[in-house]
Image 1 (cartoon, helix red, strand yellow):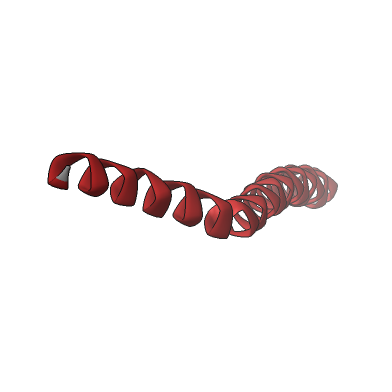
Image 2: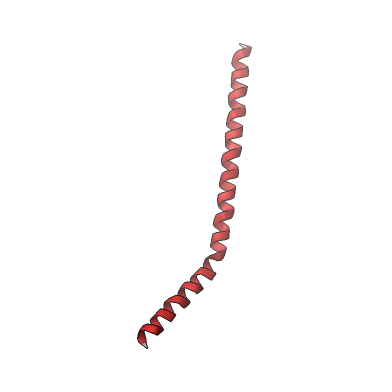
Amino acid sequence: MEETYMELLVYLGILLVIAAVISLVLSFLGTVLVGALRLLPVVFVALAIAVFVRWYRDRH
């Protein structure tokens, strides 16, 4: 009977470790995504400038 409780505790510990790792990975991905979204206006402005420069050169 005690072996069953020990196995249950081991499985519970393994599940907690896996949950912690998944949580850390999702947190890291969230941080990267927020950083990427913060850079989005800069990328948009640079892309708009590049498009307008190409459009200007094609017209002249």
